Image 1 (cartoon, one colour):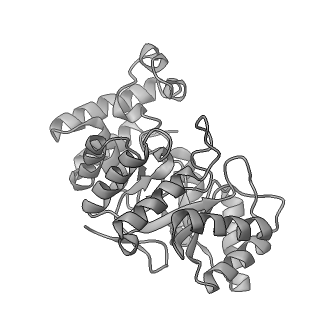
Image 2: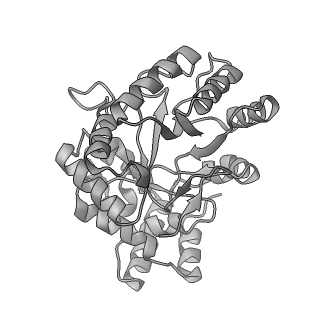
Length: 314
């Protein structure tokens, strides 16, 4: 399996990340273990989670996903085969203060049952805490061996740039990756605002909402389709002329390649030169197998051009 370098760091990741938001929510512990086993057996290694997953589920308070991953790491003995990416400062608490990070990293390490986190990400920006204080705290964690590399998610382009400049000026570790929303429909914000930064600073890009909340799978063709699903509210927003054009093109390309619209949409991301590893989630090994196959699809230039034209924006 081809590995890609995450930013300028030494971390090497396969071209697909598993989204751990489902662990302890729509995937119970046994299912989560089976999914992680299949993911690693397929040659993949990047597992993305957060200290807040999955606080939104009834009865959960956050940390459930990390706890399940930690139990799997202990049982499987595969810690050295995976890259664990988790986050701090998300969910109900948008806090990147030194005291909060130092407390929370210990909680994540305990739940994950590991001595170090490969990629520790600022989940949401914290405008109350000076950038230098946050980065100085990460510097302490890296020097202590508790964190290997840091990354950012849900930052404005301006604050991301300020953080990168602070790291350069003060000799702090820099954010080596960005986790933005990006898919075949949601292209404009990343391409216009973030891609110049990620390319200019050689940052890894771990994109989320790879299937636009399920829309790109083709299961929401009408408002009636969307009304039948808990996630359908967001999909309604994609049912415009451009969205329909994207779906028609996904149908055409998937027929040409004898696969599914889901695989084509993921393959488009995997083959995008600016994306390191799109995040995908699954709640069954059958779903996961279909997603993993997308990395081997090999869309040709003509297919990619059709998709680019159909999803073009003004």
